[in-house]
Image 1: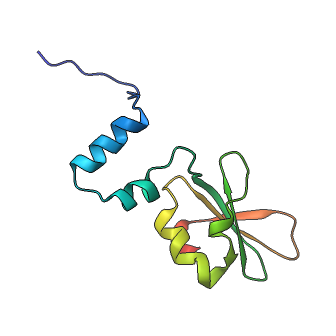
Image 2: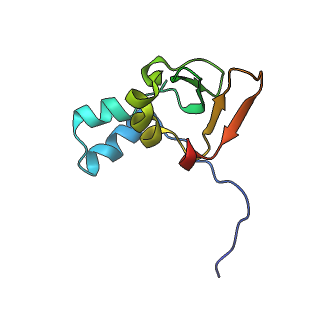
Length: 106
């Protein structure tokens, strides 16, 4: 008899477990070290400023420099690496408020 469970299921894996699994499916050593990092920052919020600069922050409010810069230079990297939960927004010169925009319109 199958049972249903409503709620979150959390799996606890060690770094060694993750490395073993990724190697099992054929990921290269370089992919593993590039993609699987213990302290990797996850994009939480992205702000485009009036002068075309982009600021990117993680969940702790810390800047993520590798995603920051001129909009046209960082846009594709941000869009391909930002999780679905990331918040996209614009800052305007004449307003102190930052306005959220849908990912597709950013």
